[in-house]
Length: 154
Image (cartoon, helix red, strand yellow):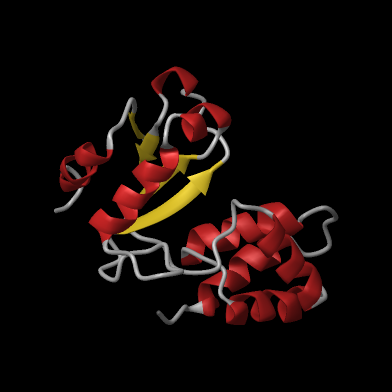
């Protein structure tokens, strides 16, 4: 997926000369482009005269940043203690199978879904739990996963 960096100039101009701007600036850049590719990070580094290593370090450290394009729907699976002891690994396996995710990939080939593991969704009483976009699904069993995903396929 090619990214158009031309739309970044206005964003970057609004941050020039300010301190402590790296995270909010990268968030705005990511919002504009969908994700932070290596080329994008190099462009920002050069335009803002910030070492590329600093930008890459921030983008890879914070989980809010995406380094690859994401799907239309974000599927978050909780890996917190309550979900872990309630067989979240089986739910994840069912998600990977139903989404037909290639090994070491988290986005479907049709760019419909991206699977993301999160530390906690704050729904411990519903463990194991997933969230698709802004909808929460709890007390899951692996067999329920295909039907849940079908609600979002359109």
